Length: 166
Image (cartoon, rainbow, N blue to C red; front, top):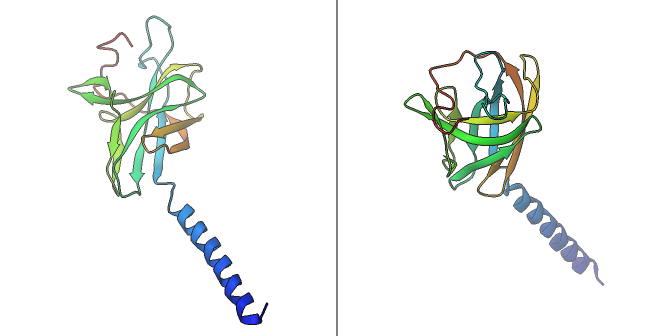
């Protein structure tokens, strides 16, 4: 094999590796969570009257760095038996059965009195200073795990459990 042919083959092989690594980088992660926090459980925290287990919310900003809308559809956490996406409508917490759309190249803030990740059926009392790990699941198949500090946050005018007994 001559020198020019060897160089050409090497260039082709390196180009394939370079393109492969570029395409993988373009696959994500697209969903980024910033400034996460979990509300500490206190005497004002809602409790499921059937199980006696407390519930609380997690708040953050979710950024979508993809060119398509992506829906936050659920999640999981070692501290919660159930993780749901909720919103507050007219002062009442409502589960979002179809999830929360995060717009293409946009972001959504999850805050008290609005959208939030609900941690239900807590298996431990969450106090200020703890940390909680939560994994969010999106309609594009992506999962994003974050660790949030637990902080004391005053309750707004939300009415937890007004519908559905939770």
